Image (cartoon, rainbow, N blue to C red; front, side, top):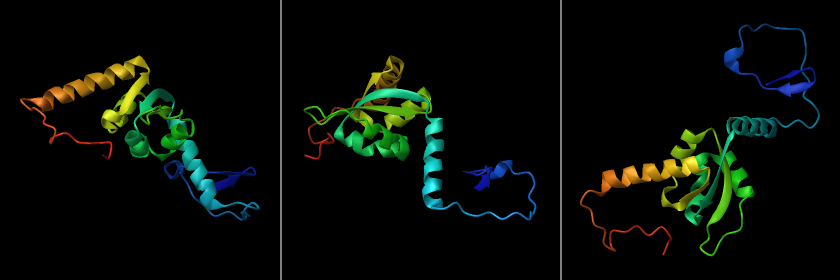
Length: 154
């Protein structure tokens, strides 16, 4: 990071082609906190990558795991605008991602705790992927009550 024309900016190291000493002195702006500035710039950068939105209905377990699936910035933004929980604790959220392929990969991490409300293309892609996975793994499997995974914590 450096100051340029009275603004503190960050520069990508890979873009620096020459370094030299100058006689100028940098005075830190009054009240400037490097840790806060760096965290905010990192969040701004993360948001700049997320230009594609989807509307989801998530279970309580998926809501809890959202930050691991989509990243902390996208999860924090989604949860901040979450709708009220329904009778089963599911909530509607708007999630920003890098694009439909990234969204599909991320939503698969949430298992059966996600329902895509929009766009329809993502809903169809998630359903198709789930069907392919179920078909590939089902074989001659028959589930008994003892085989089922209880995701509700009960």
